[in-house]
Length: 190
Image 1 (cartoon, rainbow, N blue to C red):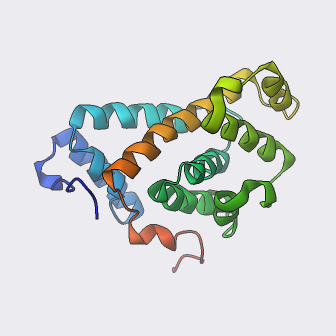
Image 2: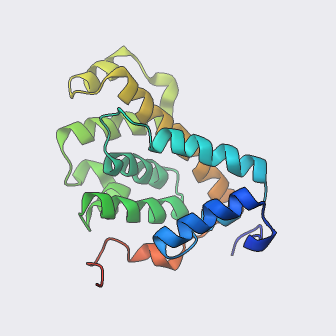
């Protein structure tokens, strides 16, 4: 049960309503994060502006699936049920691998990922758990796998941003929508 009641969509500012309805049309439901954060419209706008800047940045070598892999892995470390379930669903969809989200959420070191992705997640976990220990050798390890400095910034930024998201979701009692649990696990009905 959420600690803060979800606002009624009809009471929200028009720009936020419009964005939420776009998401609903695309996904078939309104992810709880959109309503939960809308209780503070200025923060909602800032949150989703930064989210979009990180997650939709062009020119990065990180795929959509790899971005979701970072979120799912680090959200599991932060014990954020909402983000593991919601972003795990997106990871399954983007990578078209129904087992991958469960694997990286449980133990990414045993997941069916590439050495490049393993290096990416090793760095993301270091940023998540002990960012004060990041050093030049960490950059060199990523560069050996083809990541450039901007990609490394993306990995760190996504990890840090979702660390904030994980903490807000945990404190607020945000729960994943039931729809997320099956997404990407079974083929879509036509």
